[in-house]
Length: 284
Image 1: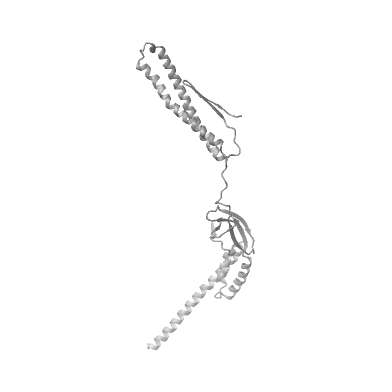
Image 2 (image 1 turned 90 degrees about the vertical axis):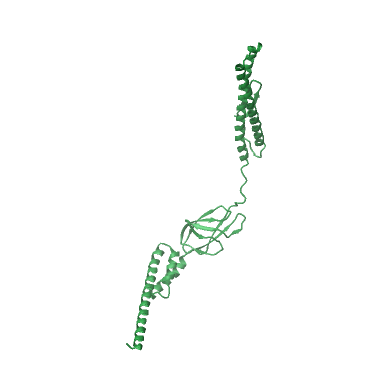
């Protein structure tokens, strides 16, 4: 085949391929246009206007068939009129505007910055959650009507940096409990000291009246008495330390700034060389 003939055939074949490719691409585009238009019908019925507007932007393109394109352009204008929008704003407790605020609804983050711009949302009921640094999260329930434009949704955060003063009775309540525990330990130590001292002193007197008169007491007789008397000495220290500590705690509690003081039991401690007891009087 002559060279010129071969070149002509090649050009014809290339042109045919280009035309075929163009027709296939055009058919795919038209199918996408029709598919988007069908989606719009369902989305508008379900009031999912934000997604409907995205699909309308596809089927309203100039590349779409004229009939489909014209319908989508008409629908787009209608959806724009129906689609509501909001403007979020937040302030701290001092009235200052906050910008770095994350707003979410149903776990979906809507925005992370409040800069005064509008945000399109589907109509319906929302519970917006506002989260800002160093601020307690806040929630607000809102019903957004179809066609509302630039509706202001404001929130005020409570002051997190200036918490309310603690309850003045807290210190008092925290001191009373350990004071009574300490007093109980101290009283127990004094009672144990008195019991051992009483028994030891009684046994010692018995030894003096018997073998002590003849100086014939054995170690087996003396050691148990001496053990009781020596063992009681640390108990006296524990008891005294407990009573002193409890007394200090009660004094600190009594001189606190609490406006009202509940009536408290009184304790009367008495001890001697062979006895020790505590009397606790509870108020009625």
